[in-house]
Each structure stands twice: as structure tokens, then as C-alpha cells.
Amino acid sequence: MLKMDENTLLKEAKDINLDKVQQAIKQNGLMSGLMQILLLKVSAHITEQLGMAPGGEFREAFKEAGRVPFCKFHLGDRPIPVTFKRAIAALSLWQKARLAWGLCFLSDPISKEDVEKCKQKDLLEQTMSEMIGEFPALHQTIVAERDIYLTHTLRQATRCVEAPSNAQKVPAVVVGVVGMGHVPGIERNWEKQLNINEIMSVAPPSRFGWVLCTVIKGVMMGMLGYACYRAGGGLGRALLSLPAVQSLMETLRPPPA
Picture 1 (cartoon, rainbow, N blue to C red):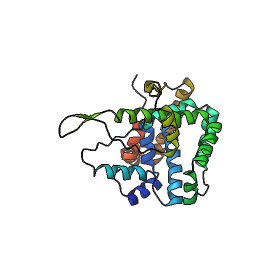
Picture 2: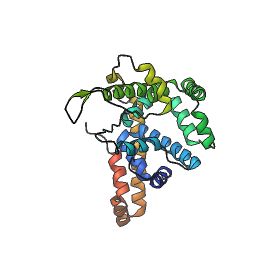
Picture 3: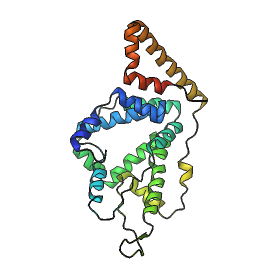
Picture 4: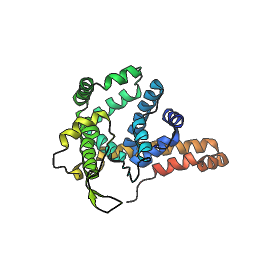
């Protein structure tokens, strides 16, 4: 994505198809994958409203880093699957339903002026406070924990490096590009002793979650089987041979014991 041009990214952000849904579920599990798709829908809505693809600052940083001799480019955020799984696990069933409902029917208009207003520190802090009040667990996993992880990776990057010319240790020059909402947290955590192992663990799914996933997989397999039956033998085999159906069946296959 860092190497894509703006037009390609705009097209990709607006296009949420079956392949993307399958890939998200395959990579992150059923619940986390579906939540990722809902967030992609929100991203597509913002992209459509503003006419610009998200993440432009990161693509620009990547481009500029390539022009600096001996510059190393690091992706310093916590892996997305870990963040999604921890976020889903932190929410109650009612909170998951409320969040999914809100994301499904998000259609408020967004202007470039609204984006500029969000750059004001007071308004940004107010928005973050509202998020804490409505979904405290979500704020903890998506914002606060990533503040800790980003602080850790930035501090790792600031360690002394060897100068290529004379192999002497010299202070590292670091430019960190992060979302505005993470800046206060990084500042608060900078001098603290951090343990990122605590925020990298993912709890196994609950028994209820396992039962729900099994039921949904069973329903989907039943629907697929019925579709093949209705389609007839030859057409059914042709349907099963399609890459999209093969990918779906791979997603639905139970994990090895």
C-alpha cells in the first residue's frame, strides 16, 4: 500500500468485495475479520466523502525515506491481527452489537473542514474523551495499548547506530510519523518502563464465541451445500471449483486438533 499511487488506493478503498471479506476472516478469525470489514467500510465512506485515500502521510514518509542515504524505514505499529483480536475480546456481546450497528449505518457527511478542525488539540482531546466514555475497552486496546507499542518501537529506533564511514557509534536521527491521537500517549509513556509482552498476548476465544463461530460455519456450509444441490451435479462441481468458493471452504474448515 505504501507503493500504490493515489488513484489505485482510492479504487481499492471503495471496493469491498467477497475476496476481501474472505481474506480478512482467514487472517484474523471470524469475529475479528468481520469487524475489520466494518472498519474498512468506514474507511471507504471517509474516502468517498473526502476524495482522498487514508494513510497519505505514511506514503509520503516512505517516499522521502527512500531519498535519504542509509535511511532505514520501520513499520512501528502493533500487528493489525493482534489489535483486532484484543479489541474484540475486550468488548461484551452487547458492546460488539452496538459497535457493529454503528459502523454498519455510519453515513454522516464529512468535509475537509471537519478534518482540519480535528487537528485542533482541544477538539481532538474531546473526541478521544467521548470514545473513552462510550467504549472504554476499545479505547484501551486500539489507542492506549498502541501508544505503548509505538513508544517502544520509537525508543528502539533512537538507540545509537554505526556511522558507515568510520564505524563509530553515533546518535540515531529518527523521524516518527504517527496519527495525531497517539502523540499525547507517546509523550506520557516516553520515560516509563514498558512491558510490551502484556499487550501482545491474545486470549483464546470463549466457549460462547467458539459455539457461535461453529454455528455460523455450519449455516454457511449448509447454504453452500444446498446451493450445489439446487444447481445440479455438473454445475455444482463447477461452482465448487471456483477460487472464491474454494477460499470460503478453506476459511470454514475447522482447525486441526
